[in-house]
Image (cartoon, rainbow, N blue to C red; front, side):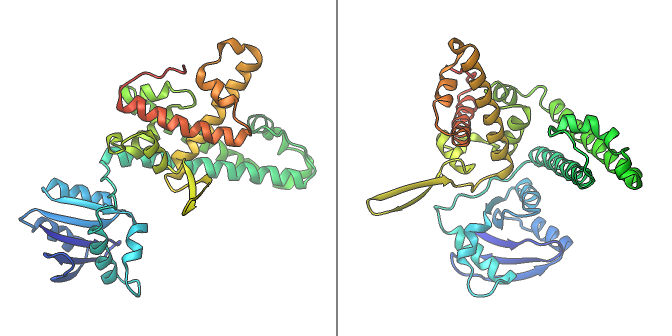
Length: 337
């Protein structure tokens, strides 16, 4: 089968055709429309090799719709195969060389719905960061003026309308009200994103089952399903946990084995949601232990027995990933015992 490596860009696409392994027979440099026609002109089945970067999933879906095979490679695994300088031509050669390595697992081509859901999460995260920036700006202005503000974000937002009217910040009052209006706008945008995610997954049985897991909410469940796609490509829950960067980083040589902190090599956003969710589940378990210890589940007993709050939260997040894989793949319902 003919292989075609493509170095993607915004407007210039470098193409390298290979019929026999390790040998490039033709190279082309195309613009966007010419590259689209080039894909459609391939009458026989072709294996397209691309880096999993911007627009790669779009071109991958286009090629798959025409009956071609698509292999997306992580840029980190392509980089060691690049010789000398970084050019589009050398990048194509590196992709062809990396594709020959059978131990490199390709990135699955995401569907349009998966990408739309991930972009919705990205919009919400961007608005959340902008909201936090405005809140910190208001806190700093008030602090420099000697005005004491509540520590809690909810309490601060309830009191900030009166705080910006204090005489110490009177010259800035109008501008501070604009910042406060931006905060309210971002909160409305975040709420709309959450409502749209809820509407999209109202009839999704998988998301509903993952939502039942302790420490996993709708946001985490939807983000996990969008990022993973097909859980069958992971042999067990530990592989999924390692893919998300939740397993310990290993420094081993000979008979000496050393495990460090988590690798943090996977999806940062999903891993953050999982760890924050596990913190909430851990706090709930600690409250249950102090009030009604007889109602503790086995999972909660395991979590509260960990030493160190942050370590326990990460360990619980690791376990929650494995539970999610089991619930997802085996179509089981979550049970804390």
